[in-house]
Image (tube, rainbow, N blue to C red):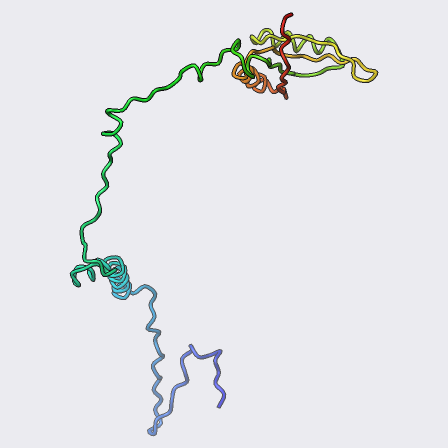
Length: 193
């Protein structure tokens, strides 16, 4: 027999009794009212019990068995002992401070080369001189050098020379703060004689 699902929540027709009187049937009330406090509280308590059991079960099982889970009978945790302070207290470290001094006149790579930075290159001499003046006002030793590339003259604005890489690095940082795409160049120092 087919059922009418569209009208299932509507009250049904009154049924006829044997005596002919009609009594309306009671409509079914939905027992679902939304939030049910006791069920919610029970669920919270059950969830908390599961979390606590999962968190502390390994420790409880270890204590109950009298040993460790891995089967080791040694319950003492290993202690860490730091001895370096006692060892170093009576030691003396010999250092050679000459290795850490940047001396531009010392023999080696730093004394044989000097560092030069090309700040920019222009085809117009006035533009090169303008940048050179700005760099001089910023405290950088700038020069303008004319060079010929192919048929055209170019004017390079260079900063330096610097005796070591530390000073040239500082100048390069200052140029990059001025939004110039400068680059570092090394060149051999000409020995007099």
